[in-house]
Image 1 (cartoon, one colour):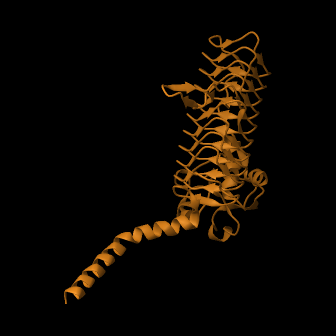
Image 2 (cartoon, one colour; image 1 turned 90 degrees about the horizontal axis):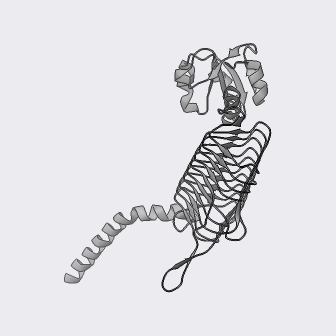
Length: 343
């Protein structure tokens, strides 16, 4: 069981400690469930009553919160949520199976496995595939011919990485992810749809995490690319030849159509969509359920369908909500006009 002294934790997160540096912390817990040796967090002033009544002795909170927590040991930090992530990582780590190839797995003789690789039961690694050091391939994973996977990756059960795709270092692919399926491309001949072969690939750069049941299609000729540090939620669709920059956030049930570009730092809300051949500028934000059909300038926030500047969309929605009263007023005015003409 892991434990840390409070002074150590303060050093890890760069916080200012008010209290006993030798106090032992044995875990992280919610305030209402915490025991005395658990560490709790104050993220919001509304949670102050819960924190004050908690049995936990130690709290991480924002700057200036010490005066509101007189009976607690307090570590003050600039960003409590970042501190939460850093400390929780010290107390917990994802399950990693032991290294080695399970006897029920198939690894092609010409595949290359690095040092400390784990391959689970019923997984298949095809010819000329390469798996980097310490990467974990969980059970029931398919790694296609010529695939390159970097070091320290976690590839969870039922993931498929199709032929000749590239996955960087420290990438996490959750269950059900499909990388490198054919893009959705067809041409009507007048009698039937002719399938367009997709002979490109997918490149996923370092430190990317992709959520369960998300799909990333291969390029038609070139590659579909996901930049380093990007985080993609569950049930997201990334189409052929899409280019996603570094440190992009894409929330669940969103879709990006073919050949669109999302530059660095874009944030895309849940159930949002980007049509084909669109460009979303650096640092732009797409609100939940928005539909992007045209260029989005860098740093702009858009919402609605078709997506437009967020404040304009809010003004239009406010007017729409007033329509019933406006309509009633128009009917009243019409009635008054009719009575005037009758007189």
